[in-house]
Length: 213
Image 1: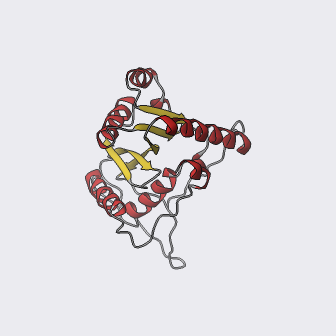
Image 2 (image 1 turned 120 degrees about the horizontal axis):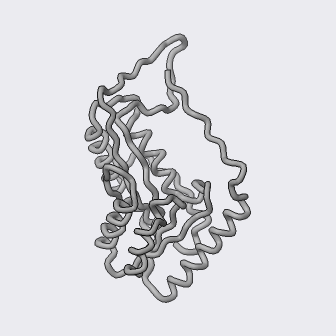
Image 3 (image 1 turned 135 degrees about the vertical axis):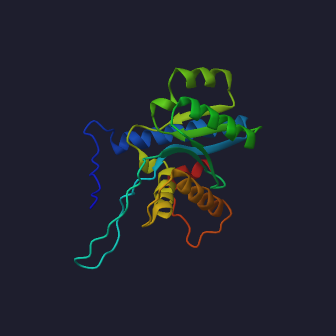
């Protein structure tokens, strides 16, 4: 039997007021950029996938035990994703690990799709988003700008909702022997999402960002 670990917010996490102040500043910064550039805004984050069983809620008959097989070899992948604020399209990159090198490669990939826009990314404070290598890249590539949320602010990053949907759909109640089986399902699901082929839409909340849409 698997049990989901409880998640509690640290005591030093910023207040909701501080979070909203930061959101207001991000919106003002982007509105200024929009006056001078054609701006494309993305919500960015990384998520990790493994061929180990994924713990999620489900239904069983009383006294029924459900066993999920465990793979002989643990494999994992990192998916870097960007959710477009305007079109709601999802852009992604598969990687063996989530580091600053992968993040920069993903920025270059996004640039190929938007060669003439100022690309603004709204994202968290992960070290891979702001270390020396990334700062050096930003200095020589002014076509991309990073807007960091306050720590512990997933409620203001709509891509978190996408990851929740994707993991439920990818894993379901199935176990996998190899990580490539999971990547194949990820590819198919994202394709269906981008082509608007979903039976039920994902309920994003872009309310605080309406001024820049």
